[in-house]
Image (cartoon, rainbow, N blue to C red; front, side, top):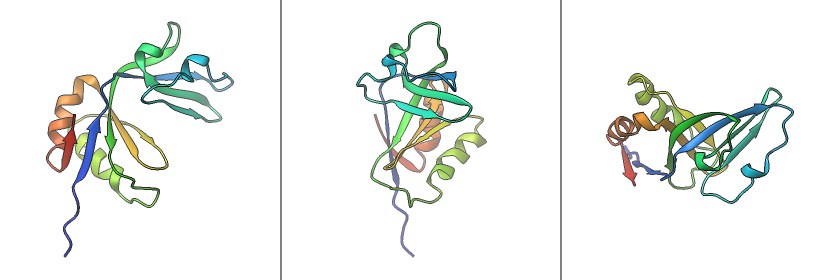
Length: 130
């Protein structure tokens, strides 16, 4: 039986904010500046923008102080169960997550206050780079 390769996670250095804007909002210019991480998602119900919180102006509905674990390596769209393998032990410990998926990888965000506990939990079966 082949041994499963350990997942590698890196921790992005900045604190992120998760913004909620009205579904009719245009994407604001402050969300288009070049930065290490930004995710923009529009649905029929909302415009959600996640980026370093120092880029977010006053007056925007935002949840601040989130930190991101980046899943290293190109897993592509065919990876199965990866998010569940990260989310379940965190959920079992009472830590909520905000997941952002891209074509190549995933980012699992946890509140900064839970970062150390999340590192301890995920470090049991992942290599964590800081």
